Length: 389
Image (cartoon, rainbow, N blue to C red; front, side, top):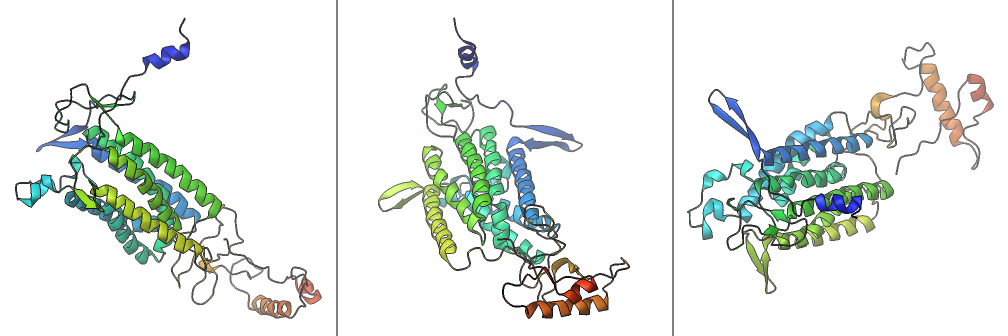
């Protein structure tokens, strides 16, 4: 008698079915508006990445609302960069074989048909983020560290667009998770039987990226990477997986020969990015001051945050200071006893005296105890403030 597990296992499909849906139409007075599944996957990735980045960015005491000021530059720049990279790395459709002019240039803006290159998206996306960061007064390196796990999450969700477009799949396979492709689809490769199954490279990359999201979050929680190191770690991880996934694909792609080896352009690009990212990561890790400054602000900017990374109050002070050395957010430890919040000049003078008195104490003296005069005045010596590592 078969067990319940065997029964359930036998009920599972022997392959991943081809999609029966690729979008929907919205009727309009002048016709219909086609909403493509590919675009929805990209949009879902952007939303998920923005939410995750917003959570991480807020925990780093970033100025309120700065995530949106950066996103409105980074997202469109990234989409344009991704499209441009795809067009020039797979030019036959747009310019014709060997750029003979027989292609269709009108297909270049038709992004809903598929085709976004991650390398172009990252490069121009970072350019857009740099513009947004400068306008918001924050460090680009701090932002890309916060955004790195979100980038992988966006790529994981966006890859499902390849499934709905039935594109960028791998070679034939007999594995139970083989992917069915509609034989009538223009992307079905010539010379294969109609029931051939193919490697679902979109699924491989989705799973690889989701594992990477968890890994980056865990490593950052443990080691608190700063100065762009988590971003370079993201680039190392992604390209490591992209090499073997890219080698499985059988779609037409630009072929490049190096050292007598001819393979896809994206394979060579992945190898190059991996090597460069590894070198930069190691240089930043072993250079002096790899984690000295936890502030996300550019020099001269003030923070208004009142919480540490773990969300606990820090007494109303921020570790970030402006050029004048004042505490961020305009907080003042000396308040008028009336409770109005206005500074009390006598209390300010007393506070300065306390600082002078504390500086004259012998080593090892407990600064928190204060002097007898300080106790009589109802004040205490200033506490030692620490910055988060």
